Image (cartoon, rainbow, N blue to C red; front, side, top):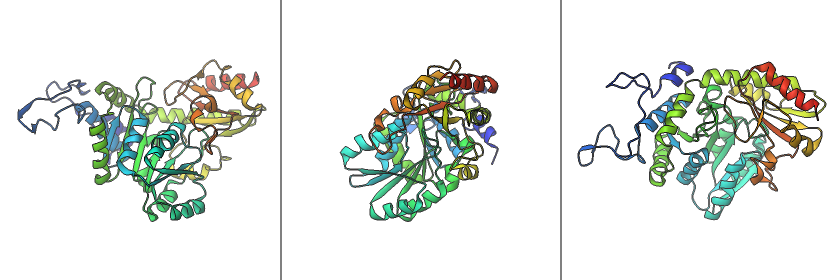
Length: 381
């Protein structure tokens, strides 16, 4: 197998056989000519079913994650929805972590709950409780998010997957924060991986997308049917932009990780900060697990403010380089208040985010500039 960066740059990117163009052309056609009814040229018939640019992205994602098949969607939520539609049925049960992404919880609770699918939010670091819960329920999927959004907790993928499999459940891993550059869940037994490709894979805050990567042909067929039948596919241009972003994923994640670790270390002990949540710190509860299943610790961190919710909200308005905005994974640094922005959907539930928590997406700007900006903002509180 070639190295990660080689796969990121080369997989799915065969030069155009007609012109020799190193970057394959963007295919915008919605329909494709047939020489005879039902005999497809290259497997393409109609753009909802398949498109050459989308197929190239999907081939690339398979190479990066090491799976069997990948499917690209219009958003991360569309991707996750397609997976759940493919595998859950009325009466099934879904388990997710206590600090899962709010949008995923809302989908499982509000959408699938109406279809007769039950759920529970558990501390996935408590393996004994997880084992007991799965023994008492008809769990179809255990949804793993590591590092988690936004508290940055770490889940032992191999241990949780083993428990899920012993009880006949599938293990789904949201690998958005780590990306395959830093963590490859199939190596730890996962059955499926979901991404918001909007984030680090696209990498430039200019393309919306999502993906599901599968490790079995049976699951792949089921998810493909959801992609084809329901049609929430990524557009050719979005697939093209995502492929472009992936080419630099490896080097970007190195820089994101380096900057985030430096920033985390710089604000530990600051009088305005009660706790820094970053798995790269030795003090983080999940540090040992993260060091075992990740090659670096990523560009996301969060901090708890000693001054409470008012200080948290105020901090987001005091930075000059960190931009107050939702989302993450672009080259620019962002800051946000999750309980009042990205995670309002879990307010009042067991997944509620502490109101004094600020989430920071560390970009690839100059390290010292980021440290100076955040510390000055903290000093001003």
